[in-house]
Length: 142
Image 1 (tube, rainbow, N blue to C red):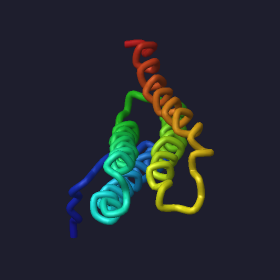
Image 2 (image 1 turned 120 degrees about the vertical axis):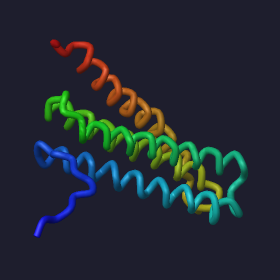
Image 3 (image 1 turned 180 degrees about the vertical axis):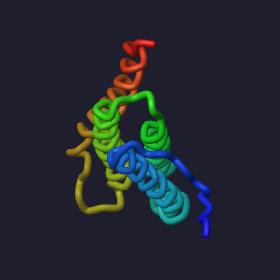
């Protein structure tokens, strides 16, 4: 009996599977956190804090899509994909993660402002991930 394949992407190796899986996890978490922010946090955060939280969700989702893209394209070496993967993972954790903590600072007993320096570091890692992709294509020989 022949099985139907509804979603078929030919993966070169385990790294592609890891990249796509992480992108899917980041996407799911972004939806969960977005819903949590829109419903539960709406009652306890100021409009400014909620807007900050939503920024973290938005950038996490952008980079979930970015990982899905990186995991499925064939024009990148596995070394380049791995570099982009780690830059994005740590970038999202540092950037979006710190934004989530800073945005909810008013409802916790711990002062997350001491980790505020992590946010721009995460942003820099995300910029570098896109830069690696750009440089790879600029330097690619036709």
